[in-house]
Image 1 (spheres, rainbow, N blue to C red):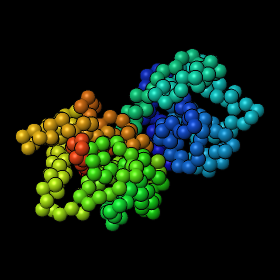
Image 2: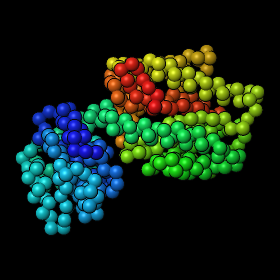
Image 3: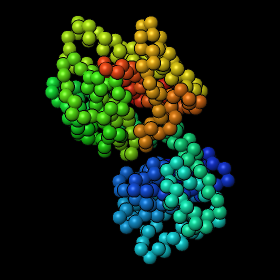
Length: 363
């Protein structure tokens, strides 16, 4: 990221706040996603590093482990301060925070660290700005969109290539490992989340983690996975039927579930438009699943239709029953209806879409 992109993101965050002088973000043993959002840093752990934002300026405080990475990766307009053992950096932090109204990410910051910082630096008052951070990240800029598109492309290719690896007797864990390896080969820096692979009856469990269940003829195979590019995630799900005669009644029942889920997804995507509420889009998919085939699948769609995606795989509100968030251009949200029948299996189909002025584009 260049200095202009960083400045624009800082201004965007402050535009959602009131009466805040500075914003303080502190990493723990893993980064606050907003630290990555503002800086664009792609390598380094930056454990317990600080990021202090003023209206048009950013200052990073970090240890010797990450200092050179920050100096080399950040534009010169971002000041980088070494958190050395002499503690001289504390006077610099104090000068930025003392007697100021400070915004903090209370959604992320541990209470013990919050109390320590407030006491140590004589902060005038603190205000939770976690909602402002979420709102700023909800609508993506062009750089973010390009990263997510690349991540989606990797996952799409991996979903095609993984089908060649289906073998009777292999375990869910083995297939998950193969999927992650294919994604890495295609350029992913890592999975967006632990890859989900479900065989047979396990496909009725939306968040089943791969285990030693073995693949059998006629099994449903559900794969839910994502790639990462420059910190940005994709999230995609596909459901397959493994090596079963297409004229069998069992095959037809499984094929029907997949078809209903796909049609529910298409109905939802066609209804997406700027200004619509996420809850209304969820209702379209849920109502279709609940009423099709004389209500046979009623109550079998058990989760929200989708969530925002970005630096985090769950990056804010999306298409949930309780979401009153109006849709805006350049939001990127998953659309993932599913049907889950305990003891039989299930199906989920998920794609990442971008809201456009004309509706939605499947990435």
